[in-house]
Length: 277
Image (cartoon, rainbow, N blue to C red; front, side, top):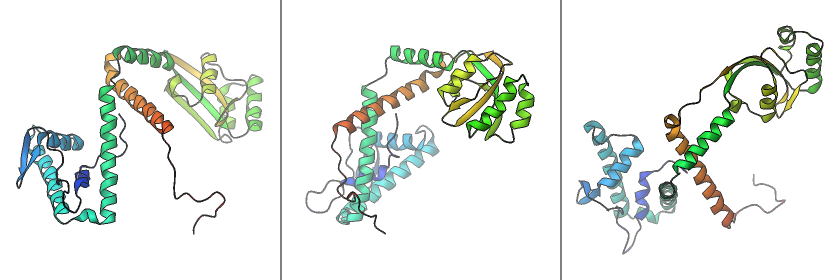
């Protein structure tokens, strides 16, 4: 699942507000305490989250101490901020609120992913689609890429006249925008559908006779060899596939939320106004 921004545990300071009835410095107290900072019990769930965010193993004594030190520092600072009414400072409040919103947003996305799991059937269907898209072969090929069609056509004239690729490549590689050989390339790795179509039509030893136009320019391509490829087993990539699908699902949900929202920039310059210098 994607993260909006790094989760900053200092967002616990968000509850620090001056005046009567202010929120406690530590607002999450659910579950069994794992430690105590002065008179404040601190939840084991919070310690687990700090350790997870830092990649620490709580069963490792040294790493456990690192996680406890970090979390206890947060609690100490939050307590100081509460006692000194730091939330009355506008800059302090804005920093804390921005970090709190980041934490809430990340936790919301995580919750959505946990409550909307990807089914095994959907994972398998995605796997089959990706395997089909990648193709069953890898390709060794060379290409020359030109900025303009005129030069590409001049180079292709030699190929049309029967000159072999190696000779044409040697003559034109210094004039091309790019002249390069590629090994073990899958079709899914190619940056444009025009190149995929062109390469699929070639047999080993053949070259494109006319330039192939893409968003990058004009290409001349030569296929050296193809090799069969065995796709990775479903179980071997299931985890990565699930992460990819959860990320895509989360982004689709966010797009829906954005589409339903009314978001106004209240300080946007009026149309036609000169930017401030």
